[in-house]
Image: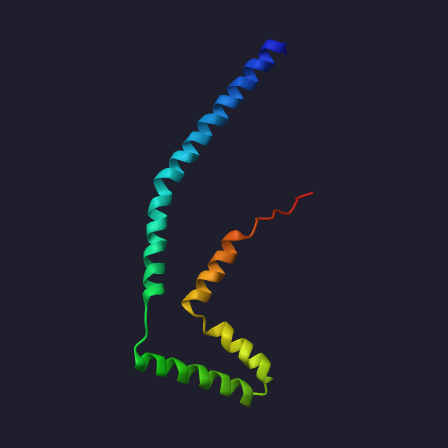
Length: 112
């Protein structure tokens, strides 16, 4: 293969890659706004959700009953508290969890 043929082939490959990238970016531009709307609406609703006094009492009773059952079952108090915390997340905890998941760099295992 001559130098000119190599250069032409590389140019064609670059053009194909640029075309593919344009298509990907177009898809992202078209799809992401809709996805964000689907996510943002429920998140806003979750953040602004307030409990009535009755709902707060019921949630407190459920948390207390869960903790009590763990301790009665022989779970150490410290471990029971950790389990209760993990089972009853506040909206702000949910956002923190989501944020921490999106900030993690992706790692890829080598197939070698």
